Image 1 (cartoon, rainbow, N blue to C red):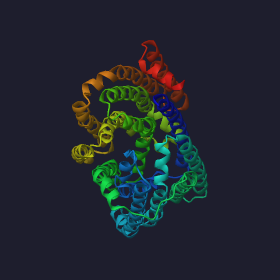
Image 2 (cartoon, rainbow, N blue to C red):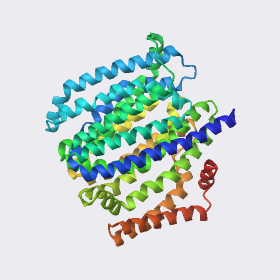
Image 3 (cartoon, rainbow, N blue to C red):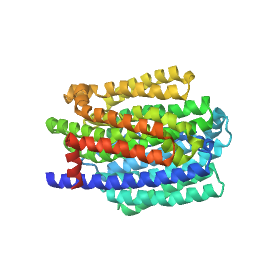
Image 4 (cartoon, helix red, strand yellow):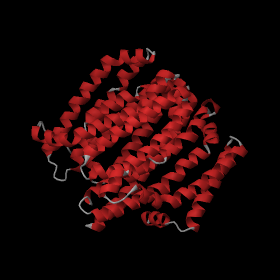
Length: 475
């Protein structure tokens, strides 16, 4: 059984790499093309509405999906109950956004946002139709199927988006691109998974799941509001183009942080659920995951910051160059994301959603205070504030893993210290190279080569154990 589980995990990692790598590559390529066809303020208009869609998504899930996912003996009644609840809430959320759209437009002072939100919100209902089906594929670690359908959806929606942008549909090219993506992927997943909901709703199942999920719901809403609070503030206080610059920097930083971390988390979470009764095995697994995550993600994140100026100039032209100054800052906040995620996963695996929610409340209050202090100082000050917030949040997130799993923040820091030191050398060398060579494509290529040579060479020279770990996964 252990070998079968290991085989599934490794196979899952490989296909998640294919999926995430393929998705990000295609998405990245499409974004480069669209950024050359659509002006920054058009991207900013779509970004202004992200928070409303995200918060609605929290209510649609309500934590019930996570509760159903972790239940080992889930039944058809359980699945149907969660499915119908999600559908009903999705429809209610859509109509709330539909009627509130004029108020949201008035808040931002942009009347055209009304129709954009009303069309964009349709994706919530469509996506919910395939929520349970997607969960079944994840439970079985069938990331191969998810990879194929997600990449197919990206390709088709990308063609639609670029075509409409070329025909001067501007912001509507972005809206219909997202709508097409949701329709294609959801349709494929429903067609693939042989599951149909029964016309039944169990109060006992709902009560069981909502007891666990309600606390995650509160955490999710807080997280989404906080994650998008920068977009709300920038969209309201500054110009739509400023929001586009910030989002471009944030998305590029996320590309190097959230994407590879998502690969590891999506595969390791179901495995950790199975190890939840063995504290020793779980501690060992967590330490290995943290070290491997830092080894892979830290250099990617810091590397993007080191070559920010030539990277933005070459990919998006000098129209977007202000994003480079923001990107070189936000990477220092985003690089800690995998360590946050691993520590918080422990509370989910152990079913302690109450502690999860408590931490979220503390961190969000802390973040809002820092944001309020930095708003009058400008976008760069807000980005520096996000670094302070990320480091303080790390201290909170490691509190319970240190208390229950005997894995303190000092233990975790010492585990990843060699990676941090090597990354510091790599970052300095790449940043200096880019600074002296300028912002052209030659500067980008040489800076990346210098950074990669130093990091990979240093890891091999000093025999980092993570290199062997990656080789084993490859084999």
